[in-house]
Length: 258
Length: 90
Image (cartoon, rainbow over all chains, first blue to last red; front, side):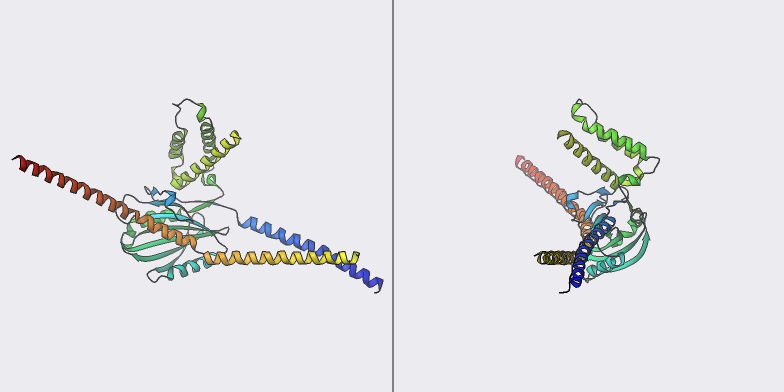
């Protein structure tokens, strides 16, 4: 073979080889970056209706993160819960899929009630009327999608009683919000005091064993502080900050022991 | 020899890339299919939980009813036995 052609082929193979390597690197790089941007976990919050009680997490389905019921009533109790799901579809596609799921059962009557503007932004409100052996039941679902995550706020009550709870339910649905973390829901002027209280609480919890048995439970002081200063953020927010502090304190204690 | 090695190197690189891409594509497709198949799970879970929590009230109501009934029955049976004792006394 002509040496000039041979050199050209060699160069071609060499460039092809380099090109392949760079293409591999760039493809993987793009994948990693895009997935990072879209899968940022956000912290949800909503204010449940007044006097509705938090439900034992053991009673919740896998996707449901929190649930409340109105135990002041007898019989079919009105309830509300928040479920979260990782999705790879748009809001309209999600709503279509939900519609299909409910329409599989002919007892269900599914309706799209349109767009509702919550604190987090625009969401879709849907309604399902269904029947069971206790009578006609109405389910309202607020569907909100952000960062490839669907947030579903579901509430149910007997159809005939629904008008009694409608205002409080509507208030709760509109209160749905998303933040970077639990502290993002706190007003700017109140944030430094809260963080100071959190630091005190963590310090007290970590040094609890070293104190005498009469040392007051630091959670009581923190509970009073929250009731007096941050009651507007609701019981779900309170549950979340308590869980966060418990986890952080436990991690710090483990770190100390290690 | 050099030719053979460079050809082999190129072929291996190309094949491994193709294999990796194909593998990723299949995984992506599987993930997307799985996601599409499961879309709406949170909505169904939410509705199911909501209804089951609402029915807790019936459970509590039934338990209370059984409790009240049991106490009434036990009271009436004790008063009956008391009366019969009295009857015997008289």
